[in-house]
Image (tube, rainbow, N blue to C red; front, top):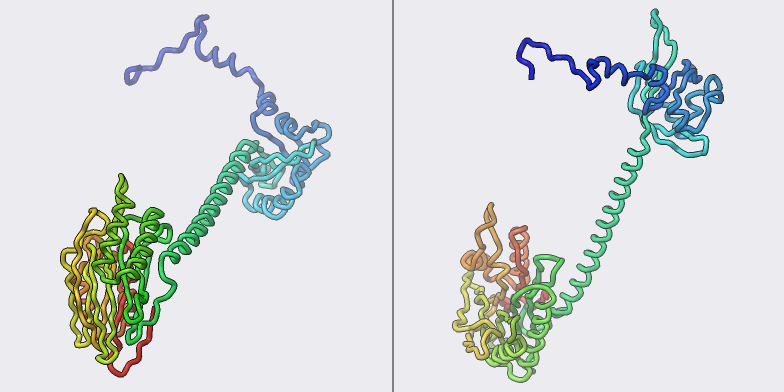
Amino acid sequence: MCRTGQQPEPFESDSGGTSGEVFASLLEDSADDLYESAPCGYLSTLMDGTIAKINSTLLGWLGLDRQSVVGRMRFTDLLTVGGKLYHETHFAPLLRMQGEIGGIALELKGADGSRIPVLVSSAVKRGTTGEPLLIRTTVFDARDRRAYEEELLRARKAAEEAREQAEADRARLQDALAVLQQSLLPASLPSVPGMESAVHYRTASPDRLGGDFYDLFPSDGESFAFFLGDVCGKGPQAAAVTSLTRYTLRAAALHDPDPVAALTTLNKVLNERYNGGDPRYCTVVFGLLEPDPEAGTVTVRLASGGHPSALVLRADGTAEFLPTPGGLLVGVLPTASFTAATTVLGPGDTLLLYTDGLTEARTGEDRTSLYGEEALLDFAAGHAGEPPHAVIKALTDLLDGFGDGLDDDTALLALGVPAAGREGDDAA
């Protein structure tokens, strides 16, 4: 390193020469040699485009000899049909206006018919009085660049095709899951004499099977059985448990419609079926509806296995939870005890069952607070006295308002006695 203000010592070669002598020996090519053998193409044309000079590099790319080009061909004769059109409509007019133009992508036409992608820059040389004399053009080989661009286009096209295929596969999967999901739920709810019913089922994601379930069906000539629950987990495994649970409860109700007996049977079946390393269980409310046409009331007897308490919305504008104490998760233990609860629905009263997707919806700006049972109770009280279909409509609007805070599937079932003067109108 030199000190400030000092000049470096001249470099000396092994033969004792200075660096200037070494550099001079390297720069032995003449200007003509540099022009002819440059790594890019050079040509000069008259203002009408006639080629007056062209270097060997460009001639080599084209596969032409100098005698057939100089004074015999114009620059546009070297271009493809598309290149000629672009030259006439864009390149030449811009060059005349600006005096120079650079980095224009064109294609040359080789003697063998090949197409050579190039980048062209041209400048007009003028005389001392400003009159245009000739056009100097530099041509850069863009074949490597074109190959790279084509590879990028191929990769982009492949990625787009893969995306479209993935979207199509996802749509087919969603259709299949929707069909399978519907097979796990009743197509419609039967008409219960002297009652109204409404139901809503919402999956948190169309890409996975939900584990919520419900049903309403006649258990004998006078009463109807119903249930609503939630299976642990999601996906095909949960769907298998849902199917087993639904058909077990239906079969149990036909044998003995007592709610405690039905849940006891389901507990035994699930525990025996899933007692290995992958235990499965569910929460469920099972009940019976026993209409009294003369009194215009319906007695409801139900039992719960670890499920959120049902809500009773009264015609007088009040709402309350129906306690079902002692109910264990169904299927966890070989034996489980369940306790029945009873209530009577009068005209204008509605029984509401729901899964925890509703109460565990995330709320607030930061989506960290759960909606909760107290908020649901307050909401239900605001719709007490309304018919089941109106209650379900209000709840579906509530679910819509949760947006991305709704992480779990939600099933809603409302069973009510029409208010005096209103006929029953099922909205299943």
